[in-house]
Length: 129
Image (cartoon, rainbow, N blue to C red; front, side, top):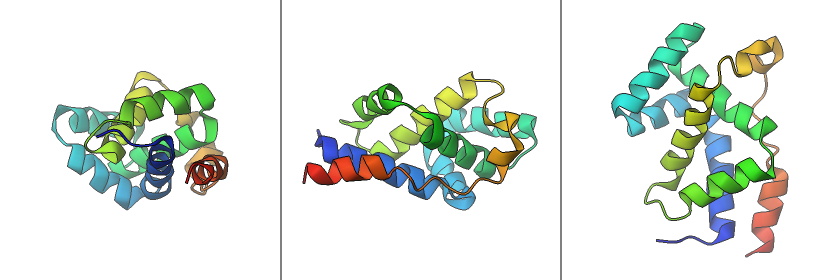
């Protein structure tokens, strides 16, 4: 099923808003499961944080630092997926796993409020409706 650009943008906004919460992020990773989830758990343990915190911080990192090219690449990967939110989370986490260290360079990121400021993306999505 191919989704419209607006639908995909809203999936990404939903991903960021929901998975910026540690508990939701942990549950979403459990839905992905398998070897990938084990890799994320190992990375979280290596960083000394809970799995939910690790996932949430990776999502916040994407939201706060991704440029239009990164957002477009994510949109392209989830547009035809049966589970776009989980696919998007997996893609965001894959980047986080490949970067070491990523967001833990800054104490401020650990205490950051979830970046519900994907408002530009939200506004763009609404233009397509």
